[in-house]
Image (cartoon, rainbow, N blue to C red; front, top):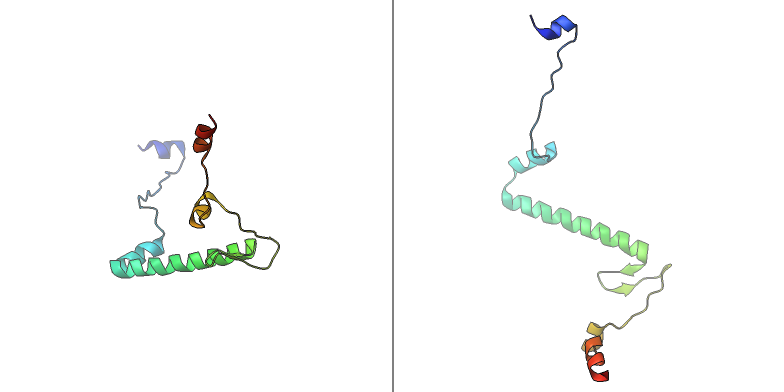
Length: 104
């Protein structure tokens, strides 16, 4: 006699699904389109996401990151020279190690 029936407990059964974790719609999509079309769709989705992210960042920081210009808004931006931009502009920049060696 089955021990589950003796104890009066109904049997519990669960179905185990071992999939790759991809959403159902994604699995169906991959089986219906060619790899080239899949790459094209992925690129289009990524471009849309990037465009949306740039818009969100521009609104948050009032800065056009694509054209690298400040926009009107809450933040005030000013250009700060860094060693790499100074070198491009012809300004010589001593590194700490050169300065220490010269002063030693």
